[in-house]
Image (cartoon, rainbow, N blue to C red):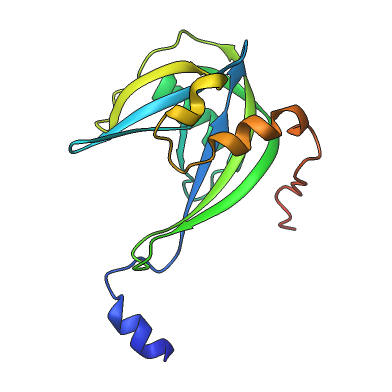
Length: 158
């Protein structure tokens, strides 16, 4: 059975993609970036693919700088989710962290997929097309998304 499944999905990557998503909230507004792929436009939390040898925190800082021109400091790990396409062609592990802005002026990065960057009111997040659809979870969890809400053990290589 596993062999048949493997042959059926030979085009699929052999390991999941790990994506770090960064939650920045300032004065009741959450920072989002707009992606455009063909005619489709949708909002996502800033962040991106973890590179080999990079820590989760390093990825969050790098991606925020690339996408928003902001220097941030990661505060806490708050959520973990995965997204698996029905046809198994994509598998993404999402790690959500909160961060605070240290410096920088908000400016859209130059990656082709980026179509906008702005702070959106938490009140309007449910009306946005947000992928993954975690707006309600973020809003409901913000009061408790503090140190210890998800235990991160760090790099345990000895």
